[in-house]
Length: 129
Image: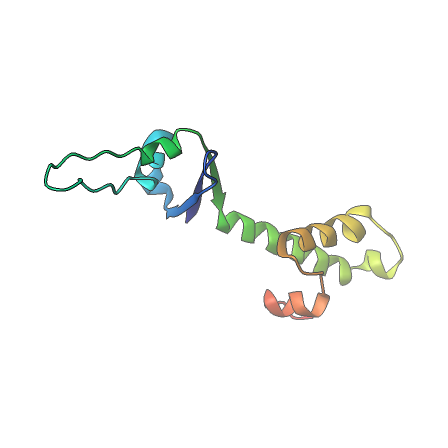
């Protein structure tokens, strides 16, 4: 699923929706925004006249498109890189590649909010240690 967030730059209000790639393939940005921010104004009294300006809120917006699966794949790849380093010959022989020592654990923490821990990550990704 692809999560889309529309944030009004006027009010700060956000609306979120999830779509499959197939649902999005034939839609342009304007159609997506219109669909996600549809107005629900009701007629006033018995006149059937609707005075509504709620769509003005969405004249200035920011669209954020996130792919949860991609994020999870990146986290798992970094976790597996950390595990590979912890079980590698390079580590045992004292070779210290910068990526293994600094970048991977740092990125894992930035993406997950948790410090890399060999045993926990092995359990999470079902890796025998």
